[in-house]
Image (cartoon, rainbow over all chains, first blue to last red; front, side):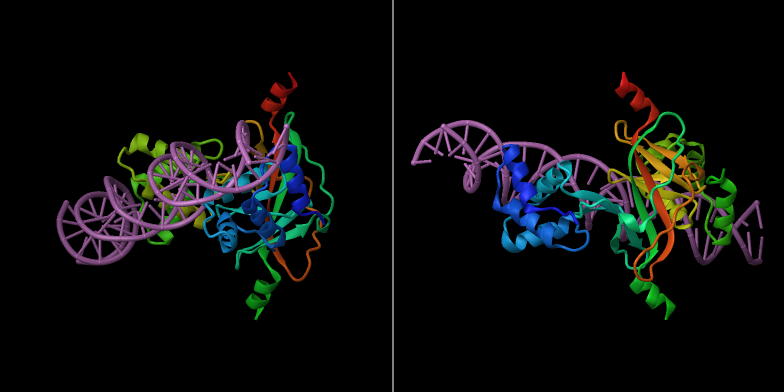
Length: 143
Length: 143
DNA sequence: CATAAGCTTAGACTTTATCTAAGCTTTGAT
DNA sequence: ATCAAAGCTTAGATAAAGTCTAAGCTTATG
């Protein structure tokens, strides 16, 4: 199970001549430890616990840079950006009742079938988002 | 090929005791005629051609109400909301080079395979977004 | 330990979308 | 056709999310 790792971040920082600041480390550590898919605001609040002076700009800069380096991916839920430190290829399940986003293992869905797109499209990847009721909300709805 | 239709809108307006205003009609007509996936801003500009006084609030109210009535669906592209008047079930293809979003016929993708989700999730639907290069951009890249 | 490059901060700014109060339009009844 | 009630539209204020900037500070390196 591959996930955002401090080692990968420090390697990348060295390779690109960037600086390893405590704020960046705090952001990475929070993302490593969190379950689920925090918003930029969530990350900012968590970092503020350690660095009350931390600016939103620092959080956004770091999140964007991690995303561009493909150490983090971004998903959209109701128009709000959320960040996903799970680097294994996976899908998402969004519960329409509680709004929670769960990761769905790549192998929980049978192998991807043939696509016959018109013209000469080059397909490089895809996102799959399943929608419905999560186990909790389905149980509540049934009772 | 099912698509947002004036008749459906007027029926719904009557059924719910709402008012059929020229502004709403202009919005619906633009959405019917447009190709692609306009943003709220695009819709506002188009409506302004006929009603220079039209407020953004009217446009947003109408788009939200059409969406809630499932006469229109909303997609997110780079964190920007876009509206999709195509009511046939379909997927999307996003070109990484030009950013354009194309509709992909439901049947262009082979029938949906089995999902074995953990627990008792209730799957009601799914979104599939293919990513890569569109025919144009692939041709440019190859040359 | 000094330097250069890069980073962080606070706050202004931008964009996208929603809310509000006042006046206007549509609808249905007369 | 006319009127009242309900609902709609408008302009502008407000909110939320994210980006940008200038100044000073921190990190990495020799």
